[in-house]
Image 1 (tube, helix red, strand yellow):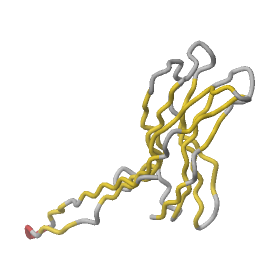
Image 2 (cartoon, one colour):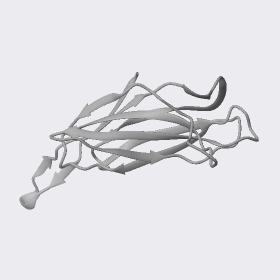
Image 3 (spheres, one colour):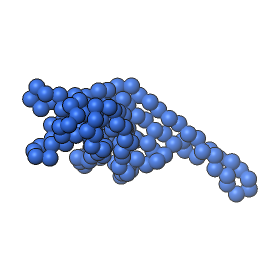
Image 4 (cartoon, helix red, strand yellow):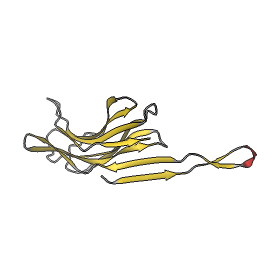
Length: 148
C-alpha cells in the first residue's frame, strides 16, 4: 500500500497581535489497489481507492472506486469498511460508494465522522456486486491500521 500524507499548519492570531501556530491538521491515506470480487468463477465487481483518516476534517473513510466488469448484470459498488480498535473494539462500520452498472471506473469519496473517543482503527476497501436477490459477492483488501 502506498501512503499519501497531507499537512497543514494554521496560524492563529491571539490577543495582543501574537501569532501562534495551532496543532497541524493531518491526513493519512493508503491506496488499497485493485480488488476483484467473484461469484463462483465469474468476475462480478472490481474496486480500488484509498482508505484513511483526515484529522482536520474529522472524517474516516476514503475513495471508493468501482467498475462493473459485465455491464447489464447486477451493479458493482465499492465501500470502505472500518472498525475502531483502541481502547476497545467498535464495529463494523461502512462507508458505501454508488452502484455502478458500467465497465468504467466510478469514484466517490465516502466517509464517516471520526470518533475521537477512540485512538486507533483498522480500515480496508471492498469491491462488491449489489445482488438484490441474494447476498452480495464481496472481496476485501488487506487491513490498514491507523493511530491518532
